[in-house]
Length: 469
Image 1 (cartoon, rainbow, N blue to C red):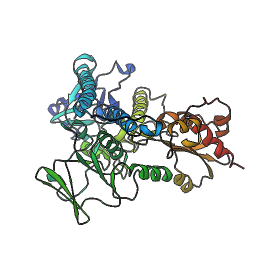
Image 2 (image 1 turned 180 degrees about the vertical axis):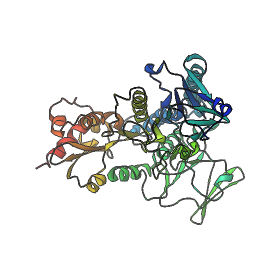
Image 3 (image 1 turned 30 degrees about the vertical axis):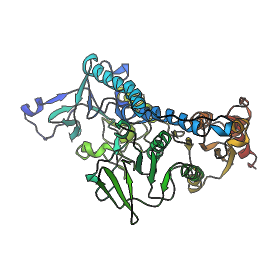
Image 4 (image 1 turned 120 degrees about the vertical axis):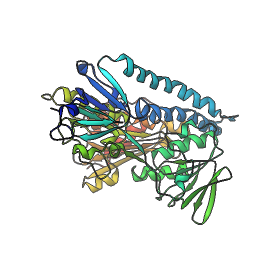
């Protein structure tokens, strides 16, 4: 049963609320509406570009920029393989238009389908805010439903730096649509967005300066991985650790950053200091929804909030900020709201992630420090790319794979890889963790193609197993 803003609403007010069976806030993973909801009247509310972060400003366009960056970097270092190449030019407009020439029609096509082609779905474009448990205000229009799915995503977090609000800075939402490739790019931040886009612009030929408040990039990664990445990346960019600009100004067409008493000029500035969930934009307190300290809506593993009939998923409800996880959460949330007597749950045991920078990183499970904090007795298996045949072919001297094996059970509790194809070769370790296969089974009971790069994974496992007593 719907509730309304006033305890005893009069008939006129009650009629002013347009009612649906389901309201979905957000058109990213929330737009993946399954066929078993075809018999329900659904409203999809979207405040921004249709399709959500991943399609429009996140993982898909950024990785389409990463691929030519990888090609450029390979060309720059081809002499170590006996091949001398030159990069004649990088056509930024051509790369940009190829990316968004593919993406923008998909986003608009999805919007048109929801606006005109879905018989049981109404697209409502605007900003939704809760006025009560089951009622939303979308730019002055009241809508209500017994089931509400919040998939409202996240947005860039902007640090408090003097003068920044008066400067035409960019975030990951805008920097990929620049008109021209900047000769000098400043980046504030040291997380995955900063290093992926730093890789892109550096490979394309921009002089990149990165300002990071801590002494290491990617501090959320396993310490050894983050340390090695920081060392390697520092050879490609002007890396300023343990420092942030004190002030930012615009002067004579340049952006001037004041840092430790000195000034640095750049042509464009990217602010990449993390992303925050959009829960605050929804006025979730009006619905009685609790939040974590980081602003995520509290949910259980069925994607239900503590308020009956309200579900939440994706970046607004978990700290991972991963599209593959949000898609799984959406499937579970939609199933459960339609099948309350047959609940499904999300298994967070082996949620992997990858960072598509140069070098590439992939990880799943615990870091070595997290395992120690939890009192898990682990052995660490490690193997350099350069100790395998394919690593020899690559002339690789910096990449490695690392696995954490619980001593008593021989189960994997974490895996971390830095180097070429990391996001692909970690897959057997993800599956091993998910299906609770022992490390000795994964290492010894399957074939590893020789001389493929997956031998790095095999040998890291064998190294760990040698230490199990």
